[in-house]
Amino acid sequence: MRFIFYLTAIALTALSAPRAATASEEKAAPAAHQSTLMAKFAGTWKAEGTSFGLPSKSTMTWSRDLAGKFYRAEYRIDMDNKGKASNFTGHGYYRAGGNDGFWADTSGDLHPLVISYTENGLTAIWGKAGGKQGRSSYIMQADGRIEVIDWILRDEGWREFNRTLFSRAN
Image 1 (tube, rainbow, N blue to C red):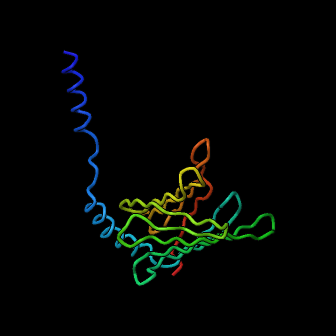
Image 2: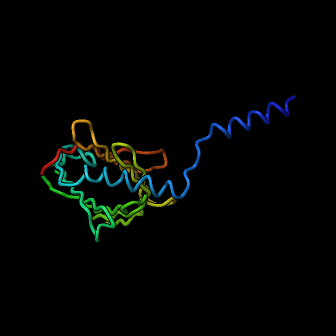
Image 3: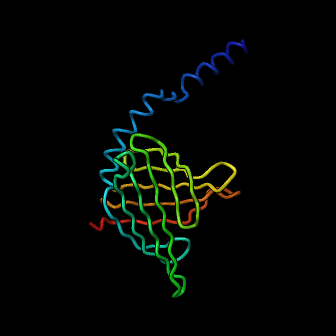
């Protein structure tokens, strides 16, 4: 009787587990949706907020690049640390029709990206296991603004270091 119970439990678990997408589904889904989403992101965006714990002004520009094979995000944060200005600049390349890319920035980092898409945005996991890792989400809000949230992975878990709400500048 226990054998039948365990066999039933295993079968139900297997049937209720999410089905892994096939390789063709993974390639097809992002291509169509990504194009629509990136058309919404295209252009220059501006924001004021707090980044790295400091008052900041940010600019973000999304465009097609490299013969249309990538979407490029240019990101700049100008911060004020008690009257002393500092900035952070980064460029992300997101493969058109794919779930990968890379990020480079003024801290000298060069990170591979693994990207997932939702109806209204994308999340990029950057870095490598055993090294510096982070997560960035870009979410299109109902009012047309884009919220960007950045986290870094620490021993104690994910720590948010940037949250900015961008409005279209052009």
